[in-house]
Length: 240
Image (cartoon, rainbow, N blue to C red):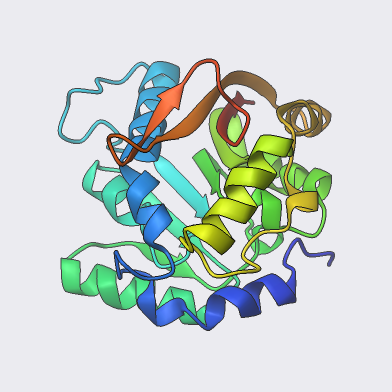
């Protein structure tokens, strides 16, 4: 079976796995952007399935898969929103951390050490967040994601655009100047343009619905959504 997992990438994250929930550690940027990406996820799901975003549990009854879930930074809030969440990751160390943290938090989350290609079920919602830029082949990975989606379901990607601006901010600033993430976390050549991701999605039988940028506001010290600026980080939702 061909796999989307790149062992070199897994090894890079495994060494830091015990610090997944350390808000000042190597995964600090994910903690910082988590509120805005969760807001996007909830709004897109509620818009697609016509659920009430103001409900305490708007995702109740939905079967949701988080591919490349890491230590569970997205799985836990999705579970609190009512979703039946499954988190998969090829990094066994990250899954151990995720299971322990969920147990301490009193949350029931199905964590599995698996790649997308190994999952046989289908889901209402598939999340592929900050993972597209780490897989061996984007087209094959998107196809695998599409196979996991039920007809009428929704998939949400978030990744990095391949632009001069993303090299300056996503590589040089984040890894070398601000040291937000360890050096070598990303390879600019593997960043994916929205047009490339959209093309892969259509080829896999899913139709892009929305593309929204995510930008860092240094004055407020937080990430915000942008309808215009997709030069660095962006989301894409697509339906089957």
